[in-house]
Length: 620
Image 1: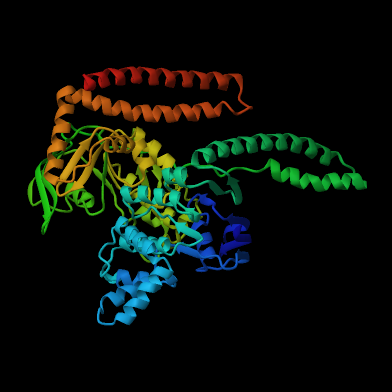
Image 2: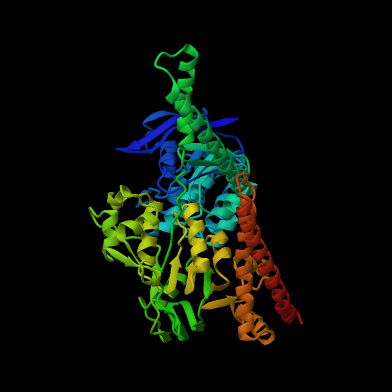
């Protein structure tokens, strides 16, 4: 059953053409992810589908009577309403029945009104629906139904918009970055919800685990063309790579044919036959195919990092509270060289407060934070870049100088640096306020990295970045020799970048876990549920004490680093193996790839053997 048909839509802003003549459709039970680079029109397409914007040409056709809900990045609400009033303001008839029933409960003297409301609940089978919508609000941490919209944070508003969309039980749900502003627990609940509920989805998301586990089709906008892949994220990666390799082969063949036809064209006499005219007409198409080039430039990240001294950063009995809410309670920690720490925890457990204390923008109530003399922080915050009126992209970078120092005494101009971050010379003279959300984040990342920090703090760095930029950022961080702290709800990113976690449990409980996010979930799922907070503190201490007793400090660090490196080597091995599919490889190139692959295999075997040795110590 066809829910939505998009026919030949185009969109331009002045001289900038985002896309032309795009067509696709959405059918019942499809769960489609829409993937494209930042700045190529993802949000514009969603705005056209929702009616917030109009295409320059083409049509958007919804099936008659299909029920559609939209989740935008910036939802709009009546600030004077409460959470409950906002939900009941929907045109969902069952919600109106529930609203009438709850009003009748407040007036027990009017038995007739109560009886009518009760019968309506029975008739519409609204009891289960009431349970469902209260469960959704609970899972999205919106339990205080009397809170006014005016006092909600941006994240709470986004979660309320998501709750509204889910509660309305649409036939088709269109989502723009649904996992932004959700903590890890909420994201995993949402994955399970979509797996269970019979909702057709069309979404833009950069969350690769979400893509893997929720979507059954991916539509990619690449170089102005749409490509459809009937599978999840892994399938998409495999088939996309094969498509690009095939395109390269076809372009190579077209170039050979072009040379042949060009020679023929030059030898033709002025008087031409009908047959030669047909060949001349075909020549234009051959020329176009032969000169096709992919715009596959990747972000290039390079730093002149300040050398780290022996003392990095130390927390000594640090405590912090807000009224009766405890964030840190006598917290002790000493950062070591090359640490790659992930910070996870539910919203409101103090992750951002911890970062503010660490960077000295907030003071602890007691205890000391000692920073090494050589430490230079690079702090990528959720707030992003501060936009100044009439400021151009190039002006943002020139605030740090016309020339930026790189490694080995080299330097680079502001224009060249921006080109490495995928801002063309023309784009560099655009106003910053005209950039897409993802482009602004990429520019902000550039401003953080060009200051050459040796201690990177990344607070939700993956929000709004496209998948291509995320892959490059991950590779850069794997090679970054300084310290890294990452707060992120992107589980794929965390698994690849960090080698141990600080888990914020709430009430000042912080657990130091040796492993990545997936390791932690496996560990958590294997543990009995402990509801008492004091018992949880006791259990955490005993768990850590057991690990310390079995491995020395250096061995524990080595084990963490091996696990992180094995993930990276496995990923590199898959990438190298994929390159062997190229039929145009020369013998020399095959030999080089074979040598590189063998080296990775040897590294994996060596590290796996050492990992097993250390694991045996833990088990003994």
